Length: 248
Image 1 (cartoon, helix red, strand yellow):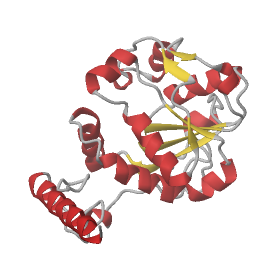
Image 2: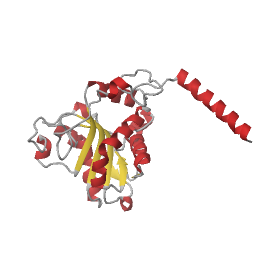
Image 3: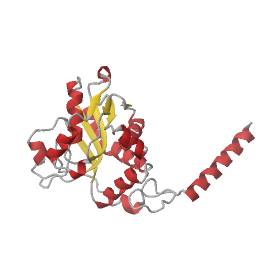
Image 4: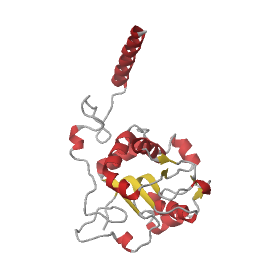
């Protein structure tokens, strides 16, 4: 029996080696083939990762230009529905290309790296927020079918496995198709998202919610979902994203 298990293990190792030869693991930032000791990102890119550090907006977590600032211009106006949120990385050139490959070139394996970094960078916030559940920003069904996956859902599931926080992918759905947000102004984004989301099971909505998405820009999407959740009994709603742009 022991010999049989050993043989299976040996065959499995051979299979893994062949897969690595055919589909070598690549750095999600520069696409260099990773060495066995490099982990999920190459050593060169690890040293240059654009983590968001202080000063950052106390509400949305965007990078601020001045130490004395507490909030970015958008959050100073107090128009957001969410309570607080942060992003792990600055949405700069290399990260932008990485996110694009992950979303549109089926490089979903990058999500393991993103999730691990998000967990590591958000620990002190998670301790303060104490979320009951993770909810990924939903994608319209037809769009998800065309892409083959919703990156926010996969990201939330990986984040949930790493932290032990429950993931709810059913209570909030995207009920109508919308225009791409990147082509719209801040006001147009809000209008574009009006009525785009729906609560399917109000009784499942928990008090402390953490939304998961890939990119934070104006906050229109997070606001739309946060507002809807609070109308159905949610308490504080927080968010975490892979990256965001600069604040002002």
